[in-house]
Length: 214
Image 1 (cartoon, one colour):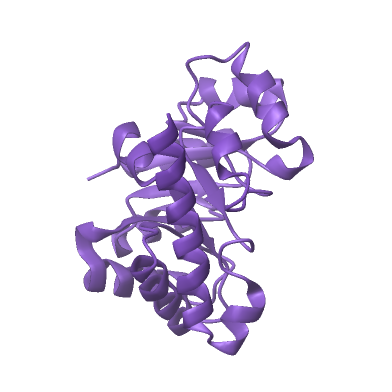
Image 2 (cartoon, rainbow, N blue to C red; image 1 turned 30 degrees about the vertical axis):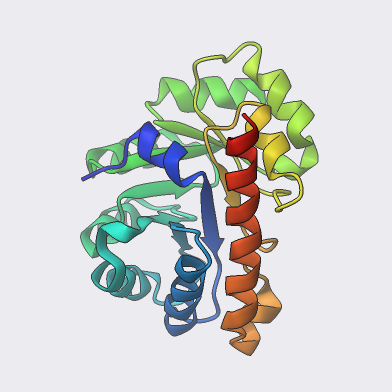
């Protein structure tokens, strides 16, 4: 089943995993879940990404919101969903790719940065617009986008950390995507799953604090 906006909002944080191997990705997911982060995006920059997706789907089931990222071809979209991905994320917006992603029945997140790109992604049927790289404009830029696009679900990715997570959500993000600030390349290379869990806990604590203050 594809995800709903309410389920995306409920997890709040999507961990964007660019792991050096499928095995590392699976171990990282275990650590993330232990730390309270259950939104998982395994990118196609991870070797054997589909194997990692299938293993995580089997191991964690509905306890995680599982998707595939860096989807750049129709074939990847089809294979990712077959492996167990419930949402698909592309770094950009291309009509043929968007059509193939939507045809899978999974939730679709298309990448955009400018207002024109947001309009294009929305016109192509994106369920969520991934604002990337969000680090270029920060929460103020996301807030500015909310002006002309008050009803478009926006998910900033890039530049999100535990310290500013609340600012992104206050600016109007339906959820946030976090890559290296959540799962560092160094921790992945070293297999330091305790560090991944600790950072995940800082994100989940920040999310809980933000919601408690709302």
